[in-house]
Image: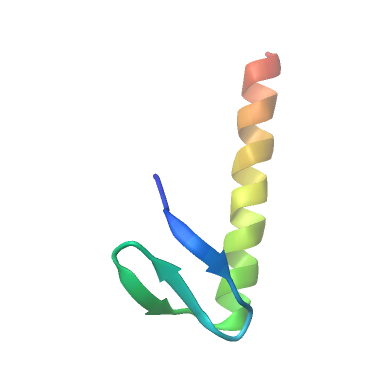
Amino acid sequence: MNLKCIGIDIGHNLRCDVGAVGIRQEDELNLLFLFIKIENIMVKNENN
């Protein structure tokens, strides 16, 4: 999953290569936590 986005402004649009997609503030926070969880899982797998 490769998202090429130009920054996230809370309360504004998330601008990606495919176009501008409106995302609510809660969704942006959920995405942020999701990415952090994925990174943590990947790091744990690399250490094993």
